[in-house]
View 1 (tube, one colour):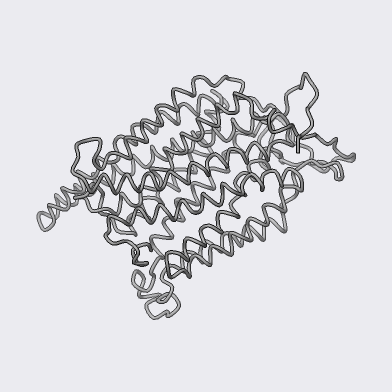
View 2: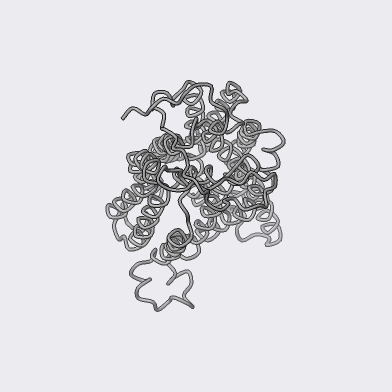
Length: 454
């Protein structure tokens, strides 16, 4: 899409403009996510979630009709304004869960994110420019000829539309407020029981919000810092991968076409379901959130160090073009086998690390009335990081492939830097106490809750 806009002077400059596109979303998200989180603490989760879905539906369609880079950049800025749902949904999920199912419930959030990201990347790769990629179906369609990137955006917007209708018809408010009955959390010892029982016959006692100063304890700040560094490392590589995969092997990439890139990302969607719903909850129940966090980080380092070496195989394949078909097929199978193994390591690491950090942030909220603020603060930290991560990774990538420097300052630079960041986060994680394994909002309070400072 960036290439078709014609703003990049050379293919090596595409990553810079793509990074600006990613960054614009994070800028507007960082400016608004705290507002959405705190607003949901006051008026409820449901209206905020519905507003976010309406905005997402509109901007998804608008992005598909963008014909210039400035227009696409503006739409991405608007999209970030409506991206507060991630923080609000974490609060809602925590409110309807209990100690018997919280890890599995919270695991559903990164599951939807990862499946959506993987399948969305596949949809973008397969259905972009459908008149050329799928001429039998869309070769004569004037709409998709004029707007070559509209079809994948329409497919994405239907997902938002389904979510919007489901939220309006079926989603019940989860925030406890003094003017309405509170949903009773299921206290059964089994995970198969309903999450919400019938409403209580008496009004729930309201819980006052803590002041911002009292919420930002040294422990919370320490966890937020590890979260920010972790997010920086993952975002740099996640945003880089499609560019790395499309870059010519002579410049340190894999030389894959859009459909192959989409396939490589889409396969992860199959793996993530098993890891998220089966593997992670079992590990969390047996070892705790903190253990899973550390194991997730440790899986990331070998993936990050190994990924850029795949370009050696891709370059050899490119140089062997026109030779023995059998040997080329074997090398291609080897490359794709290694690629899928590394991508599986990536998704396993991502699932364990991000699910664990989400649970830790939720567990540290002293009351349920502070969940929106805590999750909003986490989302703010991640959004700020995501402002800089794409531009850093894109700029470093462009610089590294333009200069003939030795390892690790060549095409390995961004991957190596991300591995170093993850190693730092892993070391810092050993300064986090085991208390983050427990949901603080349900623990007995020795002192009264302080009132919020407005």
